[in-house]
Amino acid sequence: MVRVLVPSGALGLNYDKKALQRGILAKPDIIAIDGGSTDSGPSYLGRGVSKYARSSTKIEWAGLMEARAEAGCPLVIGTAGTCGTDSAVDWMLDITREIAAEQGRPVKIALLRSSQDAEYIVQSYASNSVTPLSNAPEIDAETIKGCTNIVALAGVEQITEALETGADIIIAGRTTDTAIIAALPIKQGLNAGAAWHGAKIGECGALCATNPQSGVILIDFDADGFTVTPLADGAHATPHTVSAHMLYENSDPFILYEPGGHLDVTGSKYKALDDTSVRVTGSKWVPSDRYTVKLEGARVAGYQTVVMALLRDEHYVAHAQEWTDDIVAKCSAKAKDRLGLGDDDFTIEIRLIGQTASFGELEKNRTIPTEIGAIGIVTARTEALSEEIGKLLNPYLLHHPLTVEEEVPTFAFLFSPAEMPRGATYEFVLNHTLTLEDPMDAFTLEVHEVG
Image (cartoon, rainbow, N blue to C red; front, top):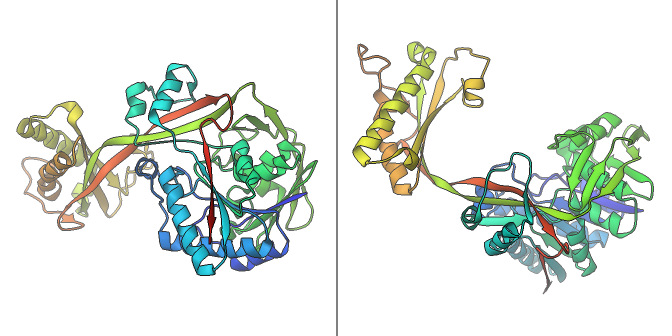
């Protein structure tokens, strides 16, 4: 049997300290936690930084390093620093060094790096080793070279290589959420289907249970299946909560694709052992005929300036869309005329918070609120140009009337100055797979002795 302790869905979300201590006393074989994902958009990958505060990350990581020492087992983090770039791995290594010095405990650290050289991906693309996934954008060599960061998502094979170093702590770059949990059970020769399925269920900690914010769960893997046990007070796993997690961030409730194959849970059986634990059997792992890893890449899409005004006048709230459409048309025309710009040089959009900000024209619930926030978003090819157009937009959001016959209104800006430069904005441009002859071809491994 292999026992995996998962403290939380991601480092930075906090975890229940009492539940964590219960997990330590249960003598886990490994402690595994995710470092983040692409949930918050492309900027973190594009810049190669974490979305979580360093101070909070350090406090939580210090607690897990103490837990690792007490349990006497490896501690592994996947997708370090939210995005998993080499810079994020180095950021996490720096935090780990600080904590090790403060705790006065020497540790052996393995770094698994996932960042990709753009030229390597260009060559792979030219040799047809890069394949688009469903709805992937069109790319070419210039698209790839334009990425500020590209990462490959490591699977079980790469985490296993890191475990083979005998490291106390593994800091992995971008990985699939499941790989860090599935690796040790598979390495020990246990049921691969159960390993991948249990890893999928446990990837977000107690999200597969009641009291999902409590974080801490134990997953026991064996030759036939796995057992999930949430450890916090008031947290219970049920066949419903466990089986439902296959739909989390996954379009198919029965199939999950991972490097080297896919998980099929069509024949899985879920059984409540008591009011807390659930046992699962019947999961299958189906190897693929070639080994692929997913690629993620982001590039600068432009530079943005944001201007926000508040509408409370009933007349303008009721006709907010007409008002904003007129502003966008007039301000766009002015920018082209006065700055000599073309359609491809900039965009202006105004999102109506409280009305259509989420779905735009698809919004069906057209109620009239008391107040609407109008956010003007200018995106341009340079930072200076976005700020200049933002200043052109300013008087429209402050004083633009609905019709020429009306008195000039005055609306409220949220801040002064009203224009808020956001700097570079990023977009995802890679949603592809990379075929590898050897699973380690796109990854590197380093070992550091600290303390």
